[in-house]
Length: 280
Ligand code: AMP
Image (cartoon, rainbow, N blue to C red):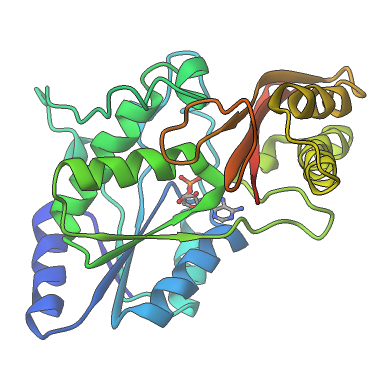
């Protein structure tokens, strides 16, 4: 695996691969890799000739009081895991390489970026779409792989790619969970034993909603109330949002039909966790 920290070097490497007619896949990450990330890598390996992963903890998507400085960093181990999966290129630029002094341009998907996580994390999605569009310009992938874990991010990136005619196909992979149902996340590393148990309520509340839906409940307000009730069983879980939305527009839906996204975000201690399911 070739590790590159420079934009021009990464672009030259990916152009060389694509110049030989190879299909190039990109898996963007912030590192602290777990099985969820590796599932994206495996999907990329199965659909592409050459795979590039990126590790970049993007300051632009963190708010001033968020966990940028303490975000878990496990670079050596990440490299070993990516190498083992057969990744050809790892792009791991320093912050100054991605944001040279004086950078003043941003990409923002208006109307979507303020919804769900964007409501409680103002500027977060602008940071995400800015860095992902930069990665797309640097790596020029044929396919790019994202996790359904970040369902709002998926909707926003799809819209960005469509609106800006970015020639990359977006592939979305299912949420990878721990055996007990907790969605894998780099931030799970922040949880102590008790919090780790409390965190299960996110998935449980979603499972409860799915069950009610399967029994015929279609009223969004009732379903959300039932989900909130499950979360409320543990006072150490503090709700951020619980919403049922159209997975493309992220607009709330009142009467649930096919393919609605149920998304939850909650704090366990100071750790903010998210999870979601698709109904129908
Ligand atoms: P992150 O490093 O958290 O920015 O995540 C990088 C990519 O991995 C994003 O596309 C995430 O949606 C995806 N991802 C993170 N956790 C999971 C998971 N548990 N299952 C599937 N994809 C995931």
